[in-house]
Image (cartoon, rainbow, N blue to C red; front, top):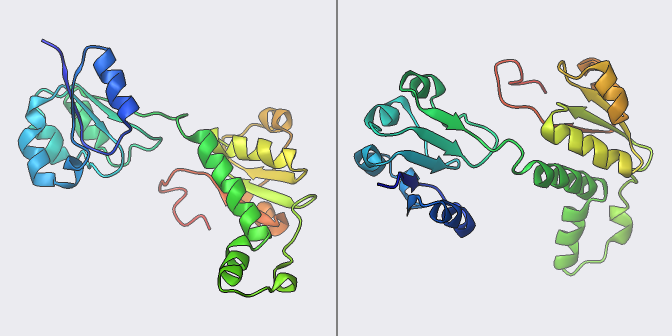
Length: 215
């Protein structure tokens, strides 16, 4: 009998097809994750659970998941999964740490450029029928200093893209070695120095007790 997997959040049809191509009995119910009571009723039927952010794999849900062997999160964080509860039940919890790294890094760069050039405000002004070009001069980013807080998967890509835009890049990350920083072409600094020197600051750290309220 083929293993049964429940997809309880909105994943692409391509993801569903991948399960089918591998002989897995996949049940695609993208709205079910928001219905906690219904999800609790049916979860015992499944060997696997594929989620994004809407589904909360709480201790209560995991206790009801009597056949569950794997929880897969289509994303980086697994903060919506009770890891200790899953571990006690022997359920493997997996994520996709590199799945959207480039997309997220490019988005951060896009937002920085939008802020530098005041694009949202200029767009709103133009859409309102105004022509205030002298009001939205903005600034060049060439030669400016970008402070990157967190130089992991996403942060390191942001550093690389910013260097390509001829920015000076400084990074604060306790886990970043001096050797790695040199290979990346960035200057490793402490947080106070980053805040003092950076023209732009971008944050790429997970939410933990150590990073909460870092700014």
